[in-house]
Image (cartoon, rainbow, N blue to C red):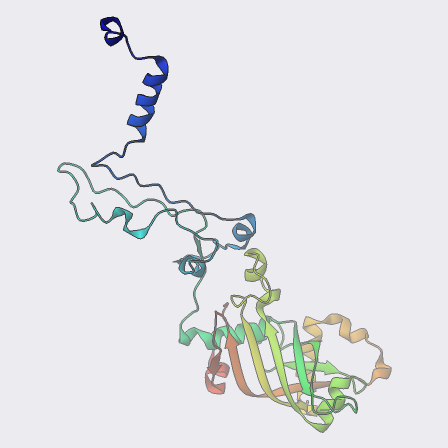
Length: 279
């Protein structure tokens, strides 16, 4: 009996004791994991860092999205109220996690007329929509893209000019109903290309002009030639049998979209007084 009492515990018993000590709950300590961000390659490709103002993605507000935190918000509450130890500087905030992105914000209202004038002058083409007079689609919207110019390179008027033919369905529509809408996108300018922004992205500004399409008067034909042929020299060689002539839009309303949601309504007075400036 005495021999058995003095026997040392076997290897299996030692191993069980070690496992029990490791698995027992530790008191007085809080283990907090770091922040982890699950970002797929697709999301990374869509994040844009071209501008100067940072903004949290809306996905962070969605608990069901791919942006997930790996710890509850209350994990740091226990010691968050304690001041830092004496003699130590306050720690700098940690760097932003990967996936943060920023966009340029919409400009102030006073800059919008200048942006609208810039788009009107910089655009070499636009999409014109009319009210169809065709027998198969009477009264329905009908659109097409056309070359456009608001004047020679050194003379912006803000008024879009066109070089058209009566054989075009758009012109046939305008002969019966001169009301039209012209869309001028920023997509052909440098911002969208340099920042790899989709042409339909709301950050890629769009100007919509609505009004009445009229034939250019004889007194204004020479200026219309300068406006169109200086921007589109090939037009001089278009076949004459198509009976080309010049039209322009008498603008009634100006609409500018250059950010997420909403469209700015710009008055004609502000539009024609503004100096063209980039969006």
